[in-house]
Length: 198
Image (tube, rainbow, N blue to C red; front, side, top):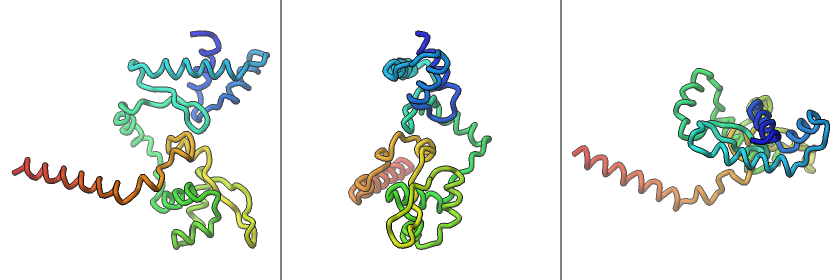
């Protein structure tokens, strides 16, 4: 592996958050005391993407939140899940997930608009989501009182393992026909299980 690719591999490996091409370029240019073209960095990242797709690695390089991050491959999820139980990363509450979903699909949105949809006061939930950096303030609305506008953050995309908001499930994915098909498949599976038991 060439010199530049090795250094990029080290940069990505040591970070706990997705690192962008721009951030790599700044680090490498300062270290080498010369301008490193983004094109060269992108080519090196492509080499690393192909390298870690091979089956002899338990982790892979993933594009997430406009950056790159090493993550364990899906087939090792069970082992990692057991480890994470001991790490006890606190999960989001149902209220937080509901609020976050509304913000994700309606953004930018005011707290009042979210509260109208949920039907409850969301002061505490908004505070918690801001503390976790899953949402951020994106300005003020033009309506009376100029209330704050909220939107999802980079941390939101990292948390849910997506590269852009466009990757969120769309309303068509929750259509009645899809739901009915899923219910029928569950019913069919249950019937087969009952027949097997008999």
